Length: 459
Image 1 (cartoon, rainbow, N blue to C red):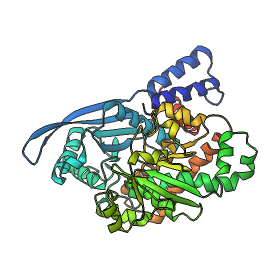
Image 2: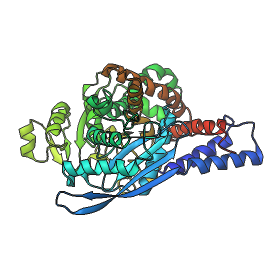
Image 3: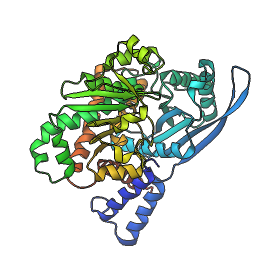
Image 4: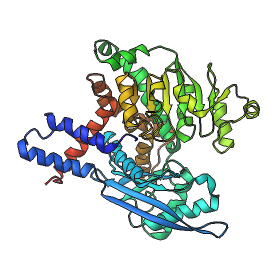
């Protein structure tokens, strides 16, 4: 199973219960009662909404499509989280992802709660008109629970600025005269979206890696050298090394991270393999990422699948089965596809010593334990892929103020926001034996627990 957020919350509360940094003045039975309340609140969503969207297809067939909106917790602000269109969507997955959003926003000090949505479809099997209708139906069915100050959806797997534009337009039609600009984020710029929002997640993913491998080492090298921590020793071994990088998933997030790696002058890294839902491409000397990005932009997001397509695109690479990318003999692996990609069946074949979770929950519980015990540094989803959530907040603010940032300003604000989080969690990770994921969850749970206690929600 993918990393279970409830299990991570339980572990985090356990360390806080046994520590002295939270509610030190409450002891014995009252302390146990308070922590039971925290477990109850943080491990369950506030609301789970499910509907079956009635949609008439182009061939006039009427279908009912399952759809969800989960609102986990709003103690920090309005619910916030993406809507994914994917055939694997199910209720437990959406609850888990909504919980992760609550924790992610808490970790990065973003004043939103956590929500998530999903529609059980393969969007590739529907035409534009049908997808437009499905998007508008979603808003119609959930219009009472979403809105600029209630619950603010954004794009996710299978959705983009196009769907957000459609959805905001439908929200505006349903609520005439009401504020609507902040009802959805991830919109097109012309429709009130933020410059840089589309690339924000991928840029944030690469920045979390680049900051650790360059900025953090430059600043803390003497300190790291003194650490007995095995992760610190692993990190230092990668300094100034030619890093071979593979990126699973070449969609909006993976392609941007690949381009960032290709263009980075601070690290000596080469992207030698990328994959999508069809194939993996490999070149030991490094792939031509800008040309690949241009090709996928013109070919519905697909990488070249045949030797002829590679030649036509001017790409020097060999074609391999997509699953081979995960087990390549490389230094760094970016996981930018779907959840549960590294598991019991392949975890022992993973050779990368640094893994960056660009997707949500791409490593399951068993594999996470195994890799950490084998000294693999894992930059977890909750830390690495928050760029979209952070810039969504900037978009929401810009919409309310009707003042818009330049693209450079957006990225500067994004990196500064992420850097604040890095300053908290990276030093802690290299100081003890907890994993980086555990440190991130612990910090987020402490933030949420403190606010819940201060607002009197634990009585």
